[in-house]
Length: 57
Image 1 (cartoon, rainbow, N blue to C red):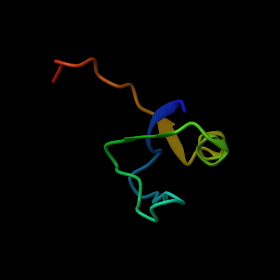
Image 2: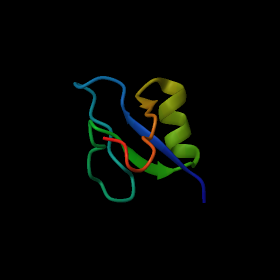
Image 3: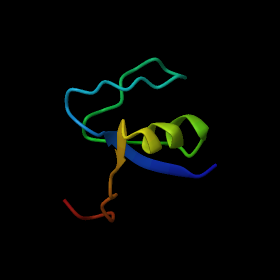
Image 4: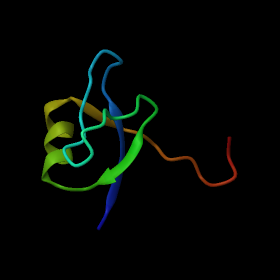
């Protein structure tokens, strides 16, 4: 399954993962590209995060 790297759109927004019930990290996480996360993107609750190439700090 494809994944997307996302983080909350704002620091005061808490977005829960429906599978783990944990809040999405403010630094961003890789999540499955499914209807739930795509809806959060569309609604503006989360934003895409560019992943850094390996070896970059």
